[in-house]
Length: 185
Image 1: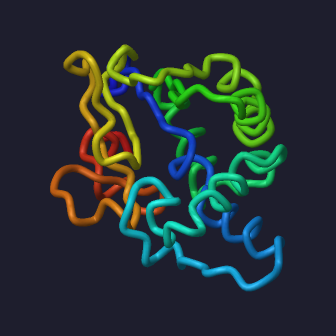
Image 2: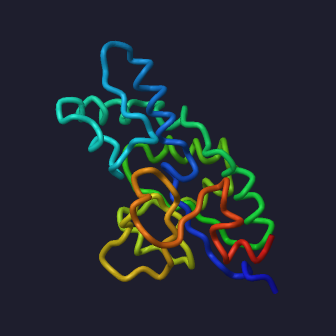
Image 3: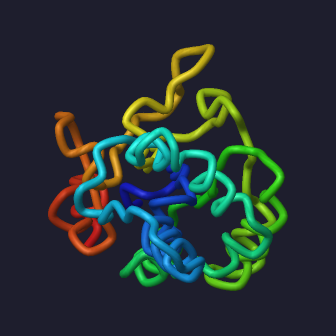
């Protein structure tokens, strides 16, 4: 029996499976004009609008809320290959994302890039502590809520969470940075 047998892996979508920052930069620059641009590598806040001057925050939020924004996001490098391998190894994979008006668009994006089965099993929860799993891979430094989680948080590496200690992973380094998966490769 492998380590993966029976283990449920919850995976966030924005900034973990979908390259939210690259998609935002493309959409923001396509608007033209004189706009400040925060390079993804210099971000310091989980919420993108908090990295921008206050006078630009509504414009940042409006850009993200535009229909089609999520459909144009590229997958994070390595995400598709790693999820395919994890599924072959017996992990139960569930994408766990927050609800909102773009939910159908995000589910369509997930179906296009990761397949309809994963999209059909997607959970939309404002409080991820309600999700049942062994692990949650999330770029949010604090994905906690109303109850103690039943999962262990594994931080997905992003510039805005590098100041925090603890287990972290990216799709390009996961075999050497997440021992539970490393034992299977």
